[in-house]
Image 1 (cartoon, rainbow, N blue to C red):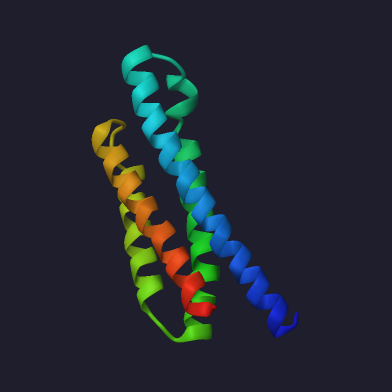
Image 2: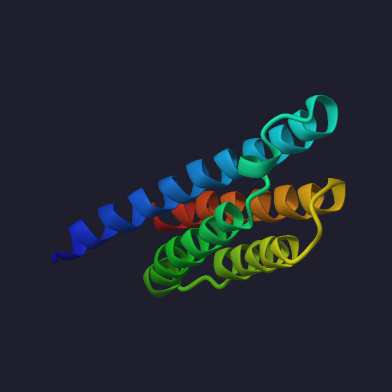
Length: 124
């Protein structure tokens, strides 16, 4: 794979990380609202497998794109912020469903999304 192709691949991963972070935040907020107010979709939306899969996906994409970003631009900031967000997301996965989990998850995905955006700007 050429250097240019690697950069494009890493950029796509960063953009994917931002989109997945956004979708995760929307899922989290909507789940709390729908289950709390309407009692709808609890079996599907609160399924731990969804959260575990999302965390694994975020870890893989983050490790590759943010790690490659450090190699490319030499700045540790994006990976440190991303790792902090991933830790918050991991804590949320181990927390009982509810507002606390939603707050941890949204804070975590916001940090991860910010890290991917920062990584994109550093590599430009």
